[in-house]
Image (tube, rainbow, N blue to C red; front, side, top):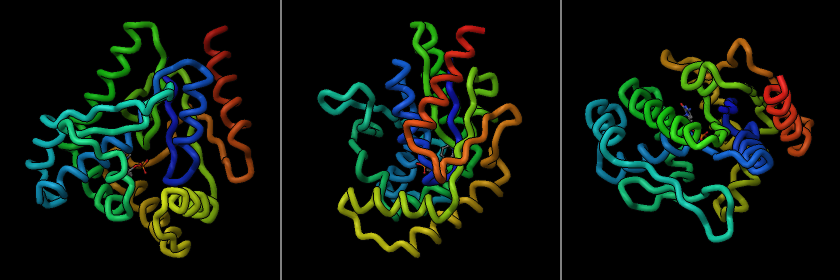
Length: 229
Ligand code: DC
């Protein structure tokens, strides 16, 4: 069973997707981390962010893998071609570089194929998958058993993102964070390929004033409903 969690930057997707995966005993896949890893690899190799052929080569040949930190049940580390990029994918520079990378058909095709393979592998073992991204319910898994589209006001999302960066020891500028969120929302929703939008059958949840526990329970309940149907 696939649980698709889509939504804009800072909507709480990652926190909630992880909590739901833990509560359900499902695997967890952060597809944004995959697009980010391609952007980091492009930067490391001096590949221009609009060089579709070179980016396709990276996406098709450099394996992206997820790893665990001791004691954790969900993966939190990211590797591309064997190099750890867990911290490198979360810098403000990559926040910007990842947009053009994720807008390329060549990159999306390669990564969507990998995302489907991962979920199929888990399904073969009878394990569910919580998958978070932008196009999971619309394009990657249109038949997902549960689809949730998480939103929150841009101001609340900027506040959350700034708090996260502060925790990571990064310098924080709230106005710049808000501007980046608004820019990415526009870019992600207006791009031609797989734009950010809720699937017609997604449950739309505005998390601005909801707690993480409340939204997590909502998702767990949806899964239970599907199971008992
Ligand atoms: O969720 P995130 O902020 O880590 O995602 C990073 C970028 O990747 C974001 O700008 C949108 C893009 N993305 C995408 O196009 N499709 C996905 N399924 C996941 C992320």
